[in-house]
Amino acid sequence: MYFEATFPPTPWDLVVVLGGPMNVDEEQKHPWLGPEKAFIRLCIDREVAVLGICLGGQLIARALGARVVRNAHKEIGWYDITRAPRAENHPLGKQWPEKVEMFHWHGDTFELPRGAVLLASSEGCENQAFAWGDRVLALQFHCEFTGNNAGALAEGDESEDWKPGPFIQTPGDFTARPERFDLLNRGMEVLIAPWLELL
Image (cartoon, rainbow, N blue to C red; front, side, top):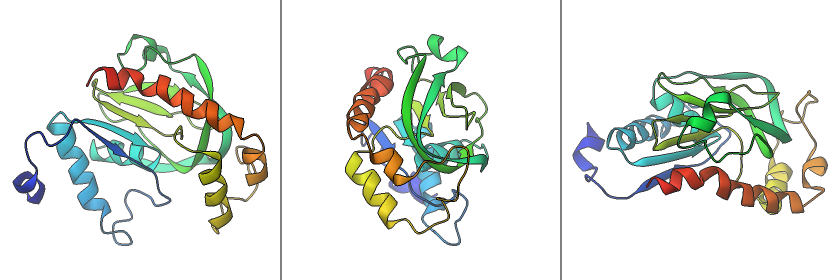
């Protein structure tokens, strides 16, 4: 395997995989998806810590053998996530609040890989976060967005994401209070702190 031949034993401490609009299995349209999933799996096998956000979380799930499917509803805007019962006893979820508002922008969702622990859910999406062991953390929601990049993405988006739905807010709705993004980014520190502490 190409990655096995070229991947040094311990090149870094962690890998962060971010988002995108594609489905994880659209390899004909996006040929890099196959090698990226193989790379993520190799990182996990080598015990490199991996964090995935939105598409990144879905790629982790797929690399671990789980399906990524269309969610019942698109989820775009500000919605609460709720800590799952097993999270408080898991090293990566023990510091998470019982409920916190997060930013969402996705139409797909991951199923839980075998051996994963669900960390959080929302009203619109059951699987919002999972841990696999104590070094792999997959998030469906966004905690890294800022008001500027959320607004810019919305302005440049020409997809069908804006069709009305039960969990779809307008760009005006989700950029109206910029202070929310400051809270979001501070919340990110709390959510990933247990992951970083184990490195």
